[in-house]
Amino acid sequence: MIRLDNVTKIYKGETRAVDGVSLNIEKGEFVFLVGQSGSGKSTMLRLLTAEDAPTSGEIHVAGKDLGRLSSWKVPYLRRNIGSVFQDFKLLPNRTVHDNIAYALSATGATRKEIRAKVPDVLRLTGLSTKLHNYPDQLSGGEKQRVSVARAFVNHPPLLLADEPTGNLDPHTSLGIMQLLYRIYRTGTTVLVATHDSHMVDRMRRRVIELRGGRIIRDEASGLYAQREQTTDEFGDLLDNAYHDLGRSD
Amino acid sequence: MRFTFFLREATRSLRRNAVPSFAAMASVLVTMLVLGVFIPMVQATTGAANEVRAKVLVDVFLKADATDAAVERVRKTLTQDTKYVGNVTYVSKAEAYAREKKQNPEAYALLGSNPLPDTFRVTPDKAGNVGKLRDELAPLTASGERTVADPAIDEVKNRRDETTKILSATKIVKLSMAFLALLLVLASILLISNTIRLSLFARRREVEVMKLVGATDWFIRWPFVIEGIIVGAIGGVMAIGLLLVGKVAFIDPLKSDFSLIAAPETLNFGVLIAVLLVASVAVSAAGSGLSLRRFLRV
Ligand SMILES: Nc1ncnc2c1ncn2[C@@H]1O[C@H](COP(=O)(O)OP(=O)(O)OP(=O)(O)O)[C@@H](O)[C@H]1O
Ligand SMILES: [Mg+2]
Image (cartoon, rainbow over all chains, first blue to last red):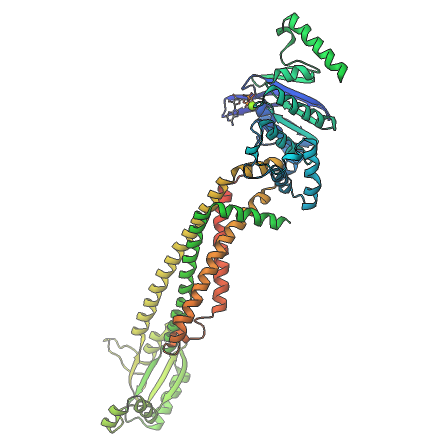
């Protein structure tokens, strides 16, 4: 689904935001992208949606070589990628329903398709009762649900989320993560850039850690922080927590 | 479906940017008003100039005592042996007298006898050749005096001086009007482009979201283009309405008094309307295009 070969992105000739990154993400994976602020997570996601072009290296997304993708084809690439952001990026003067319908019309959907798809995704995201609310009449968690709904309404094979829980309290964050997990369970590849250590540790999915634009860790079912950095005691705690999670799964 | 979507988005942002939209519309209105007055004026002055041009001719006055044979000889010289000749008309003494007397009966009644000579009116093959034609008929001698090509000819005169004056006057009018129209067209384009820029700015979140979810560039542009065209078309239609009122109220009553206004090619209002509509839409499309190119790198 995603393949990076020795990708480097240099801003203004000096900042190496992404530095020689190679990685592979298969179809149907759920991956966390972690790292300190400024480690290049957002830059990497922008490279995947062709908002930015890499300084060097090759990027393949959804079977397309982005380096060879002519600019008029970029919109069609983006229709295969749902994007979710920390600041939701909702249109303030449109209702929940219209925010999603607007995004659908922008991809050339017919009125009929809109009527069929919007209620579906609203049900999936638990927003059916908030249909006619404007964004400023919603809580942060609900806004993020709208943003997820908008990203997923076309059922793209790939969903990218850049700190989707960055503005939310732990409880609400859990709800959003569960929603992303549910989307992942429909077969969608999900890549989440996050600082939410609690969530990463709980979910025990593949974790890719960046530092200074380089991959310093890529674990199949990793924690937010490297194992060695946690105390044994804390590690045991986490292990137990993971076992509990595994049993209930 | 798509078109109604674009239209809805366009009118939505027109309402949100009422003031700049109104300014752009007013500027299109003024531009089209000026063009609407300017185009018929140019047509009229061009028509007048052409008329003057067509009247460029050389009068060949014969001597009062010229015999019929001499008249025939001169006619033959003019039609067969002279260069730059377009058309030759013979006006006999009697004809000239009758014509002038009709226009000015008192004066000719006082005169009693006929003072007018037999005349050939010779038009040149091209208006610009009138001087050469005169030189053919009345060559300059080495001493700088004029002789005549035939002993029966008394004098050769042309009306070139007045002609050039009229032509250069209409040229100045035309040039200054064209300059003014050009300025106004430019101002309209810039104002429309500014309106579109403001509405792009007001809608940058929408644009961002549209890009994000994979809208094509043209899908994003169309509402703005339509917005510009609506502004231009409203301005254009209002200008046409005002011109129509002006024509009915002022021009039509004067038509009988001024041949200039009544000249058939002067005020073909249907064509003028079409030209103005096309111009206002073109102006607004250019204005929108300018902004979209510079500020919407999607
Ligand atoms: N448009 C840009 N122009 C110049 N430098 C940039 C640009 N975007 C990002 N950078 C730089 O690239 C580096 C990586 O930034 P990036 O936003 O990818 O980090 P991040 O991991 O997403 O951080 P955070 O966790 O705080 O969101 C930073 O040093 C940043 O200053
Ligand atoms: Mg970031």
